[in-house]
Amino acid sequence: MCFVATENGVTKTVMTNEESKTTNGTKDHQSDNSRITDHLANERTYLAWIRTGVAMMGLGVVIAKLRYIMGIGSSYPQSSGLIHAANIGLLFAFIGVLTIIMSVVFFLTTQKEIRESSYKARKVFVLIIAGLTGALGLLILWYLQQPVNP
Image 1 (cartoon, rainbow, N blue to C red):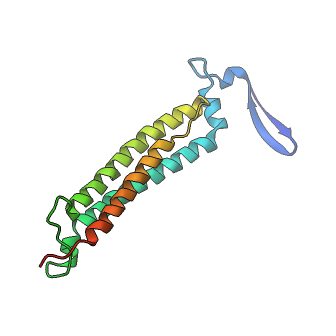
Image 2: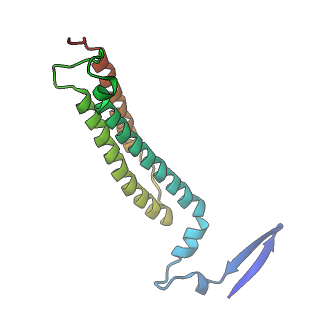
Image 3: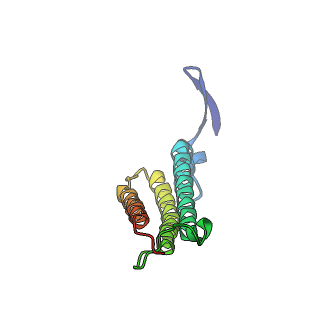
């Protein structure tokens, strides 16, 4: 049985216990409805991590192709060691793919935790991504400071 209740000027649709139960006897549907803003925030966070991963991959491609963009005769630094723009770009692309994979895992885990009312923040992932991105940024700055080989 379903009925409408008005309290303090707010109209709510109220369902009885029988209607709120799903076929397996749990109240997943009712729980999801009461936490819809949490689920929507989880989805927005997931999409933001996807955008971050795609941006990291795009930046990796740009860094790897920088030699071709700037031209052969330009004063583009050529490194004689292990660190080349292509390697730095590859690392950025790898971190972008890793970010996308981890965002899917965290989205599904957070969705489950919201339903079970047991959410725990994941600071380690954010700190690792920030540290890796910062280290790669310093690596790019170091690379650009190398003397130009004729």
